[in-house]
Length: 319
Image (cartoon, rainbow, N blue to C red; front, top):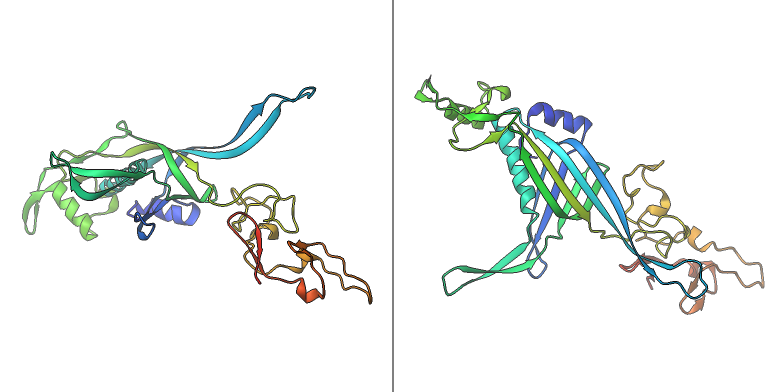
């Protein structure tokens, strides 16, 4: 994490959690080339999370009391508003850089083959929207793949700004400007300049606000299956079927780690899945699970097969 005023960072690390944004850069062929992460402890003022189900309604059949309603998908959207106060010049600069990084991820991706137009301008080709952004915010947003639909920030000028200072001061090496001296001492980590005293700078013409108000809206891109039942829930066919080994969406369940039926399925099948009973002599065993080739037969050891769940939520047995 970048610089943030020590009291805020200490309090955040011991009692709170940061807003964390990460991104993986991939080439046109899908090869990971680089990654970046930026985060900040924020002062949350508003948090709104909505789950919007998409339904289509069709005319009812003759004699039916109700129209036909068909569910297609659910969209999860999150809106955050927060403040970024600054106690000194460095804090303000880092706040602006955090906002700068948020502003950039609202845009798409471009690439160039280093070709130029007849007028001498470089030719850029649109590569697509940013779908490689992940957001973390404590247990409210847990490593979710998102795209940013809206971002805005407003400097609160009523709170004031950190001023440029050209006031001459005398030092051992000669006379200098107060803003330049403070910039240098802070960069050196000098004990002669406490954090709270770094209140002026030498960047003429630049504005460093003491507080910034930020709003951001994102839409979650679910990259894991969600819903009830299905083959991803062997033994628990009617329970919630999110399969990322966590209590979705906010980790507020009665047990942690999460209940067994929410754990990853990429392991050996458990005995409870098949519920095998030893047959009596001369008796054909009763099965509760069938393969594509028909009922499993034979001894108990033949029932125990390792399997995994593919990307379509299907059970695939390992031969």
